Amino acid sequence: MNPLNWDDFRFFLTLVRAGSPARAAKIMSVDHTTVRRRVAALERALETKLFDRQKDVFQLTAQGERILESTEAVESIVLGASEEVSGSDTSISGPVRVGAHDGFGSYYLAPRLAELCRQHESLRITLVAKSRFFDLSKREADVAFVITRPQQSRHIIRKLTDVSLYLYASRTYLERSPRIRSADDLNPHRFIGYMRDFDFEPALDPTSLAYSRLSQPEFASSNLVAQLHAASAGGGLCLLPGYMVENAPGDLVQVLPKEIKVVRQLWMIIHRDLRAVKRYRAVCDYVLDCVAREKHLFV
Image (cartoon, rainbow, N blue to C red; front, side, top):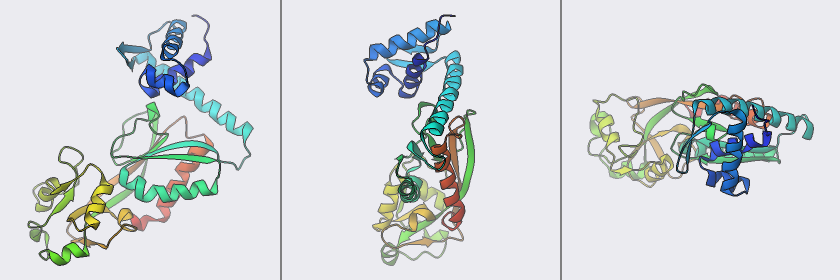
């Protein structure tokens, strides 16, 4: 085996997370040919192929996956050692990228993580709130909160809580619309929900009227925050979690809470090699504590 240059591993790691030499070069402030050259040097030193290349797309090989796992473990050790020698025992500092479902991120996490930053002035949090899965191996997020349990074995996966969703509508909408006494009265009403091919999978009876109307809404969006604002503006009935409604604009009220209730699960995921690093652990523990103290927002 040829001598290893440990700096080549930094280029390898950045390329994996960026997905292409051009994006990796931008992150590292070098030319894209430098990224290719350093990764090729690492492959020669290891005497193995780390990527399958198709034009500008670099896909990890099985050997590359194994090297990635080891490289991230070393990165975690270096980060932890750096924190120990550069900061006091009580300091929490540095960047943390948090990914979350749009509703949970925007309405629950945002104000609470802002408070955590206020408590630790050197902590820098980036919150990415979107309706999609986060790939932790590419560092789209360091810590993610998702509603579908991921299967990656290299991550620590923990159930945060069950989340109950109910039908809501504004008082203005309900006052001007036919009265709702039971689920049988839902048919003439307008519904707000997800685009049909996007994320409609609530745990409702697929033969029920509520399922039929929610799966074919009159106002559709891939973004739950947009749905909330549409409901607040009097646009119709919308399936929402309580933690969003608590501080929402308008006058949203529950509709048929005893008949229509959807329970989903909220999961926290973090790469196992980052859990020991102080700033990531602080964010995870803080969110876990907030949710435990505010269970009433999720039931």
